[in-house]
Image 1 (tube, rainbow over the protein chains, first blue to last red):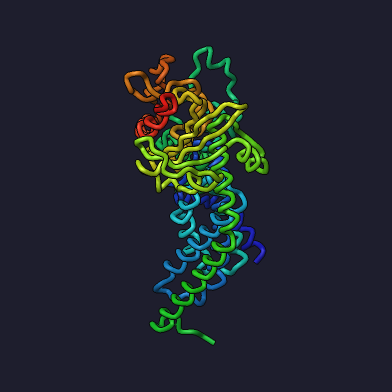
Image 2: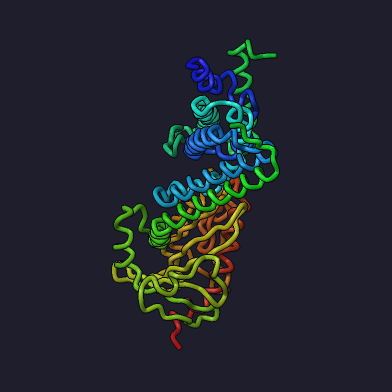
Amino acid sequence: MATNNKEAFVTPLSQNNPILMQVLGICSALAVTAKLEPAIVMGLSVTIILAFSNAIISIIRKSIPKRVRIIVQLVVVATLVTIVSLLLKAFMYDVSVQLSVYIGLIITNCILMGRLEAFAMSNKMVPSLLDGIGNGLGYAWILVVVGAIRELFGSGTLLDYRIIPESFYQFGYENNGMMMMPAMALIIVGCIVWVHRIINKDIVE
Amino acid sequence: MKLNTENNLYTILYIVVVVIVVAFLLAFSYSGLKSRSDANERINKKEQILAALNLRNLPKDSVDAVYKQVVVSDLVISADGQVVKKGEKQDQDGFQIERKAFSKDNLPLYICQIDGDTKYVLPMVGKGLWGSIWGFISVNADGKTVYGAYFAHESETAGLGAIINEPSFQNQFQGKLIATAEGDTLQVVKSGAANNEPTKCDGVTGATLTSNGVNMMIHTYLNYYLPYLNSLNNPQ
């Protein structure tokens, strides 16, 4: 039992990472990583919502009629997302303004449906909760790495603090506009997958 | 006990119960949090109006007090320069109009006092690349030059179109002319093409469509407000 719990939490961080291995959630990984800050907040929001929806679905999994299970999963996720966005509006208005579209996008994030269907529907509550947190964090760290690379080379800043000094620009250094394009995010994700497979030889088929 | 979860009746009842529970949860959290989020929205709108008057980064709890002090009244005018509602009380007339309700005959306008000088704040709305954009431009008492500007957006690309929300973009509007003698209004042109001309501001590099959106919005709304602004100088 204990090893199961640990496994549910640890494998999504690297060996069974949702982005690198399951190739889920790529769309939002491209959309929100032009800057580091939205990437971090998006990663955290997905982690929280995934953990809760995994736990809820796992609790009611035995009562869900098989034919309508996807609809039930969708309703649970959409409810959680709406409540989180209402809470943000009431208590952290500035954050909610910044995240306006991204929060809504969480409903369509395929990691959620993927984990609910693949794990929470057939596992107990505690491992499901841990699986949710693990997958959320596995998704978040990729977003943070991609966001950091794109913001550093695309705008010369990290979290809006200037990292590349002004003097570099006077010597003709220029920000890479390509970094701001979603295409570059896909290339960076590709490079991370590459490095990840060099390090973990055992996962190469 | 083993439930037969494949039964039609069970399936229908299950869905009905789920929907009722969810509807109740959502309705409850919405109405429970509504007063808080409305208050946040009002403060946010006041912050934006003050930002157009170059009063930025005020602490949250002082926004109401500063707004009360600075904004004298908010009225509603129409595009031919007529005052529709006088707005003798604060937060009553112009302030109540939501962005969606802006039209040629329903234009809010804020009259403000800063260090004894009168300023006019003109709200405007438009379309960016992905969603709506809006802004406030404050005009000096002569009705001819820009005192400050503030722009915001719903969902422009972070790092590109979203730059219109940053002071570096907004501050270049200060001191620009609202319109030339020939009637050409303030413009946002291609980045680097403004050349310090009095009615031109640089757009955002790599965000041509958002910049065009800002340009269109300014063009449309300044034309709405111009008759009123012109009447400030030539009282008939």
